[in-house]
Every structure is written in C-alpha cells, then in structure tokens.
Length: 104
Image 1 (cartoon, rainbow, N blue to C red):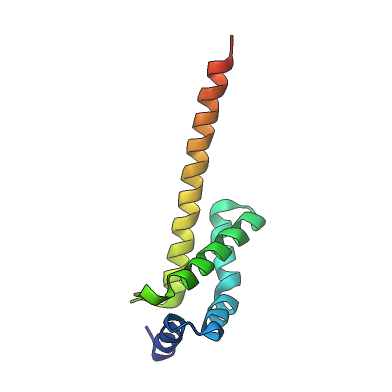
Image 2: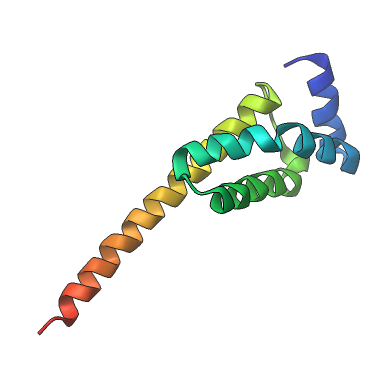
C-alpha cells in the first residue's frame, strides 16, 4: 500500500469524513462496474456498493487493510455480490419447494 493510501486509511480510522468521501468519490464508479458484472442490474449494483462503502465507515476503527484500498473494496464488493447471488438461489429453491407443496 502506498504512503498516500496509508494516510487515507489512517484518517478514515480516525473518523475523518473527508477521507471517507474521497474513498467514496474515487472508487464508486469502478465498484459499481465490478458489481454490475456479477449482477447485471445497475440499481442493485449501486445498492451493494453503497452498502460496502457504508460498512467501511462502520468498521473504520478496526480496519486492517494490508493491500490497496482499491483491491480491498473490489474484493468486498465481489464477495457481497456472491453472497447476494447465493441467497437469491436459496430463496428461489425455497420458493420452488413451497410452490410444489401447494399443488394438489
């Protein structure tokens, strides 16, 4: 991780809202693109990216980022998309089972 990124992460950990805004502004479009590759849904992609970036703020005091912020966020978005797709698949299976059990 570069010195500039280390400084941004340290500022974020200390609750600096400008550091948070910088991370959001700088990475948002790329992260939405990454999410949309998995989800093929702009609104859902934006929602997941917003959740990931907000979660970053929530856990800021305990952050331990050893790779670049960009790589960290891409991995977090990717994992969140995969989790969403798994939950969607599970819900679809459950719906199919419930629907089949209602048939005469």
